[in-house]
Image (cartoon, rainbow, N blue to C red; front, side):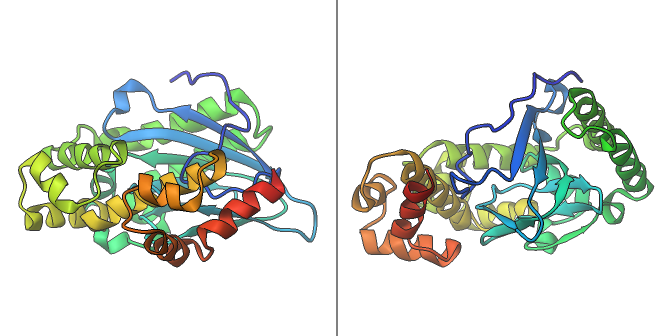
Length: 279
């Protein structure tokens, strides 16, 4: 697998509530190879350096997918964090992560992803001995220069070798991939009934599918996409709060403010103000 050239300091994704002044790390992102279509989405490799005595919290409105992450001091399989995911960087370090497709989690876990919502386990718990081999391979190739393209290529190859046995994707996996793509790709989707109609599923059947494969609810999928887009608009656009609420289909600004603050622990106005102060 030969990735594209590294892209340090990529534009902030809509899921990330990153302060503009945060220079604690360089983020390298690479697409997964075509052979992993439906199973893996992309790799990300942050390399950080935080001055002694300081910390750099990284806040993310996570996508509805599982993650596999190997770092010098841990190797984990993550379910979806239903609220705000926060990782605090300190000192010098790196991590190699792969964002799975929605279908992948239950295949890797060997059962419903509802057991992994808001929690993680050591990779050996889901990969067995292959998890130990994966961890050792990634740490060995990243031990030199963690910014090196060659190290990234080798680390991603190790990840791919560990995950390839979970191909091909099953029928339910393809369906949940399509459901998530539909919800994430169309801001006009604001009700669960629209998803049911699009895929010819009863509400109960859709709930069972999403709970089993993602550990979530269809309503969560819709709300998460709206909050991610809200963060993106507040960070990059000139719209006022009322306009953002209207574009995202909220009945009023107060409802939007409550939803945003409940998950992020700050109001939309506070988030937008932080972006302007640190720009």
